[in-house]
Length: 252
Ligand code: BV8
Ligand code: ZN
Image 1 (spheres, rainbow, N blue to C red):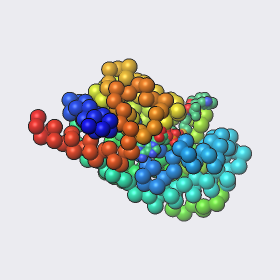
Image 2 (cartoon, rainbow, N blue to C red; image 1 turned 135 degrees about the vertical axis):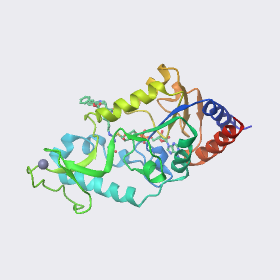
Image 3 (tube, protein in one colour; image 1 turned 135 degrees about the horizontal axis):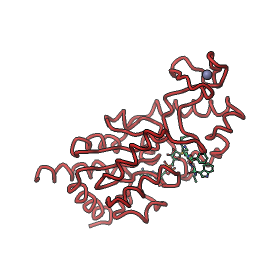
Image 4 (tube, helix red, strand yellow; image 1 turned 90 degrees about the horizontal axis):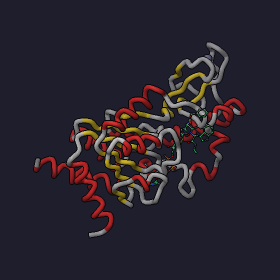
């Protein structure tokens, strides 16, 4: 039996015995939908430095440049389709008493695949708000190449994502922390585990006794925490994992 087969079987057994599951996802789960990751070779951060574009200082310094970069990414994400990994997770949800997706992604592909309980730790690219007064703006009538001026306060409109140096939405992060503390298994999928406090969710689950399964073709900052590592792409592994959990649920 190959290493992937063996680790798949181990992961399926852990899930079969679990009632409460957290799935922590990063850019890697959307890679097979054609959305570039951040830190893979050729990824986003190779072309741009995060501090140049994904910080409030960058936006205050050059709002149009930051806005245009996000608007271009928004178009890529809007044109992308959920892949077999997103869809398998959506079909896993009803097999458990609690199944919470905690994502760092801003592309809404989990929701478009049908997942109902999704916590977006870093916001979403499909919403915008005024950087000064917080007023929400619907995406349709906004320009592509410059950050609109808020007619209410004269501030600039920005994407509703969490930038480096910004706090995560507290109610979302608290819900993610409590799900992590309660879960029996945490799946960490497609994340390098380099960004905090998001990656702390995996530590929290581990420290509260959960079994940690990592699905990632590469070794990461979180691999040392994993009880089981499945070194393969998410869109290949997750449909397999779904089938095995379905079969074991039928035997129960
Ligand atoms: C905070 C949204 C408190 C925007 C993102 C100095 C000052 C202030 C803060 C800090 C500082 N120094 C460090 C920090 C903390 C900082 C941080 O963690 N920095 C890191 C880089 C060291 N964190 C913050 O700033 C956070 N806020 O700390 O606030 C505070 C406040 C004020 C002052 C002090 C503290 C906010 C962080 C949120 C940043 N926003 N995104 C946008 O998207 O543009 S982060 C960005 O990285 C994305 O959200 C992304 O999800 C996240 C993590 O990356 P990954 O998802 O893991 O993606 P990556 O490319 O890295 O990895 C992909 C993986 O997939 C790889 O392992 C690859 O092998 C794998 N893969 C590839 N293909 C597949 C696959 N796996 C499976 N299947 C495949 N097919
Ligand atoms: Zn405003």
